[in-house]
Amino acid sequence: MRPYRNEYTMLDVPPLVQRFVFPLVVGLGMLLGKYRKYREAPAPHRD
Image (tube, rainbow, N blue to C red; front, side, top):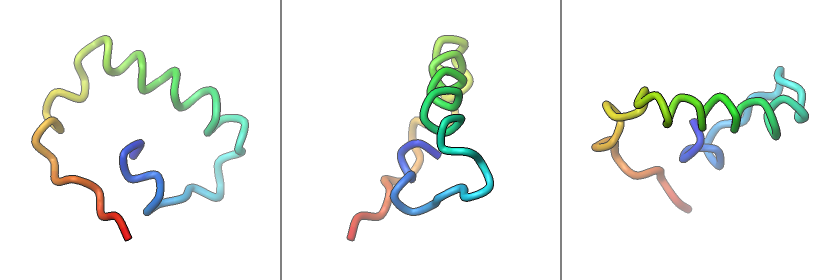
């Protein structure tokens, strides 16, 4: 969801978790190679 953060907002998740925990989880996922299958995903829509 990171590249699409301008299109989607998760209001149920506290801002502290969105700001600190989510980036840690994403970084760990990148280190483990969990995002390779999304390399060729379409670019996010910009207004």
